[in-house]
Amino acid sequence: LNDRLALCKGFDEAKGRWLVQLEDGEEKAIKNDNLLTMLEPGAALWLDRGATAHVTVGRTAILEQMEAEERQSLDGDLATFAEKFNVRTELNFIDGWPQFSIVMCGEPDDVRDAVDELGGLLSFHKFPFTAPKRRGSGAAGGGG
Image (cartoon, rainbow, N blue to C red; front, top):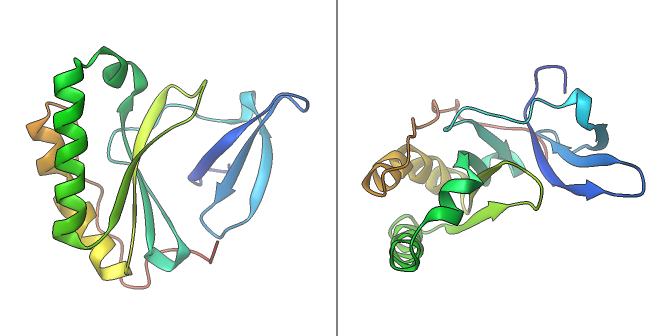
């Protein structure tokens, strides 16, 4: 929205609009024509004063094409990664949205450190990924 990143929370069928949350915590219902749906891998949306980061990883087709063993390995490595950095991690994909992200939540310093190291984990799993540029301290907008 106006060159700002937003988190896609889902699609409202009745209104024909995507529900998004802006970095400052504000939620809006946006027409599909007003969204840039493809973000470069590594684009990060920081929420909750830096305590939450949504980092775009790639197209959902990549996950769908993974063999079960590869996917289990990725899930296990994400769990280990979360423990190492003391953050909660999860894969985030919305039905109908072409991309997925990894969501990390925790203390802002821990989240920033984890985001900085995410590229290594994703490279190991052969995702084309460039880590997001680190935000300054006080990273990110409002509460949510």
